[in-house]
Amino acid sequence: LEHLAEEKPDGIINEASRQVALADIIILNKTDLVSEEDLNKLRTTIRSINGLGKILETQRSRADLAKVLDLHAFDSLSGIRVLLQSHLKYQEMQRKKV
Image (cartoon, rainbow, N blue to C red; front, side):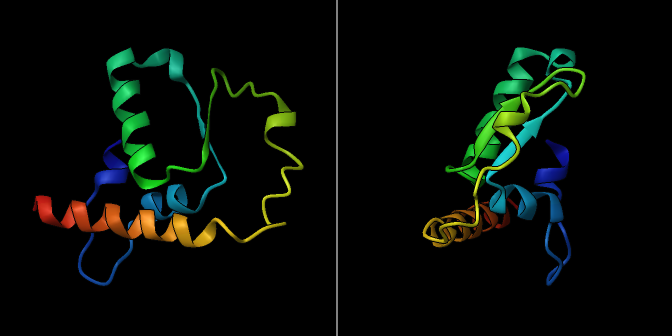
């Protein structure tokens, strides 16, 4: 969570935030090691950055590969504009907090 909110100097992109913004699927691993409250905060933050990406929660890196592989994510670029707009909105909200 702290990496997503980390402030970068002007002109430098927060790489963690950028990756979440452009992801088709976001894998949250080790969810068994954090409180439900912290997990909910993380889900909310991720949804504010990328409302379209699927969140897959795992423990011990165990994931159903059918949910991760062969997604055909690049077959359609129609959602890219929405993802980028969502990411820009999130970055603007972060700047206003400072």
